[in-house]
Image 1 (cartoon, rainbow, N blue to C red):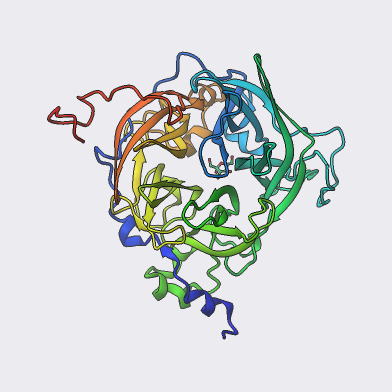
Image 2: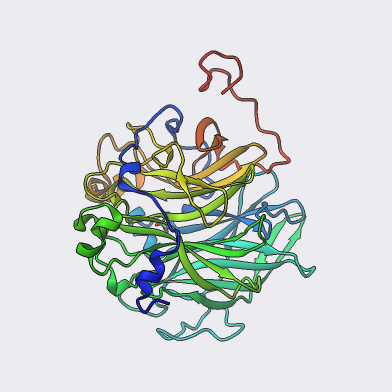
Length: 453
Ligand code: FRU
């Protein structure tokens, strides 16, 4: 028995991304994405498009509804300054028959004529999402009981109706929407029943008022059902409370000042399997002392191993560490760990040094023996400018340098604790496992041309 919840917590195995592991982050041939150029055609020129996720079945496979696959993206009007997009983020859906051409079906949630008062709880059948804007999530198409039920998980950011934007983050879901198709396309319609699913508890998961770090996080819910145990889970991005950095510095093998960087990958489970009923558990990974933001965590199961992927930024590493805007990954034999970093440091895929911010917010999914990685085309043609410098450019220059559309999909080979970039597909090309990928160019990453990587 423990009176102090912190000591109970210490007895559980929480995998760590340590400073010494992250100190080995270096670009390499295996982890480098090619330079991205603007696409010939934008998927929707009227929109900025960034974080994107696929509609998936309960078993994690990509849902195909009457021949259509569906993606959800955070979007904002393209005439808005790109740096302002997070303040108005709206989840829109896009559908495609071939995984190449995407049609925008519009916003997923109806904003409703009436704004719910600040802090108000949604009533059943209420069609208005929580938050003053909605951030990233995931989407489940559940056919367990026959008819497909749609669950759109999202981050309720701020509070609906607020006049000054706040950064409160809560995990929410809109459920009960329907998906209909005909020869002309696919339509998602409400009403959705919106619910707040989880808020930080202050012990395992930092509350906003406890935060000393640069950017507070409790967001990006990602539905996952463990194929080996059947456990129904929700992963999310969070921070670990470190109430007394002096006391905890030994435990994390970091200076007290580094402990303000306290990113974690959180997990909740649904004991009944109900996709709207969650209990918080200890995080599955912590980057305390290492990195502040472990964004959009998600898992791909390949060869019976659990590959945990997340996105992070150059500027969110703690002092003394140098990382990149990149996809990072970890592997374990079970969902709860213990995780070891892929490629020793955790670095899986990053942008070239000459274009360090060209893509961000990666999403990995399995394709036969490969893993495909989607992301969005972010800032390019910066010629050495930092992201802070970009914010000081004239508006039209900020717009010109922002991609705001899907990036080329990257093909990854995976072998145990190692990954390597094998090649790329077109911007926004998201093939299903039943669809063949083009043959790999033998010159690409295959030094001796023998077809072995
Ligand atoms: C990653 C991210 C997500 C968040 C969204 C907000 O690109 O920071 O964690 O949900 O952007 O726009």
